[in-house]
Image (cartoon, rainbow, N blue to C red; front, side):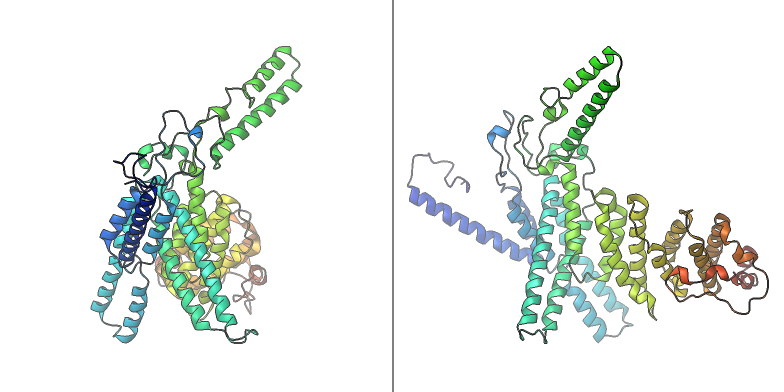
Length: 533
């Protein structure tokens, strides 16, 4: 039975009653929707068999491509349809809310168990970790068997994630309005519990969507990655090149059109500036060859492509999905660290507009830096701040981001305990790249860092102190204007260096000296004392 036509394959077009056929189609459609709803409930419950069955139904239920007519296709080409976005969005929503697939209720149970039970019970912690590891099973199944093999599914997954994030933001805004207005029009009393619960649920779903997007590290980078038709769940139709059938015009085609226009301008300039009659004739021939009306134009020769056949559309959909999810509140810190690292190492390299992620990096640094600037320095918050600054540094270095407060922000992370954290190598690598890659740093910036780093070397471990002394030595050699810090003679009654300020202009580092090097010459570690001399 074909649900689209509403008739049995074995029956003739003229046989049967139209009313009975309509009722039969309505009954089948109702039963189909009921069956799909039961599958969705089973997916939410964490049943992998239901997930496989739903993917099978989705693979056998194509829908017609909107706006595509037979006139837009080449002769002999088949229209295999496209993925049903409605069914796919239901599957995504069920997976991110599943009790087994990236469920965040387990994290809440983890916190309650840790509060009730003894902290020194390692067996309990191992059981919790094992339970959390089991939650990846459905995500792994969905990614390996349905998302990774099919390029069109990857495209519509990104679009579905973006739509779900948009719906979550709208629902959260409605909850905030109801909670603020329900207790009076003056908004003096607000139901903070309802808002906090709604934000926690949104944060849980946002974390799940981020972990789903992080598995998609195979976004097509160029058009050659999409040439194999077997990588699509439904092979895309072949469109004719002499019409404007698709409203999703290829950016590659637009690029070729711009290129042809540039060649036309070049030809015009050549013809105007030529004094030779033969050169003007050659230039006119070039204009004719690149004319939009001629049949030899690249634009008319290029085969039309639908959206999920274009690499730019894939990369743009991946970018928009990330930006939509990152706008959601209450992302847990354990996932935020993975997100920041994934953005820096993969997403910024393939997305069309990487500068749009600067806001998220800045917001993450401000959130992670609040704890660093306080009395306690936690590993999670300091790592979040380091990863955020690393993403901003990549945007500054590779994508011309203007962030004047970068060195001031990096300076705030120079805490005495930073050399004792397990991620100190990541921080020292970022510090070395930021200071040594820029030869145009002002003297007060270099002096402030040299002074603060020598202070850290006094209290740091030997391995960290060795790296700090080597970095200070390289900075002093590269910036000769800071040599006054080691050549200033005389006894200094009081060190005028102001360590507590965040603005490097106010540290007065160039008015001080590196007397810390004299103290390090008497260090118990021979390598440190030798390097300090």
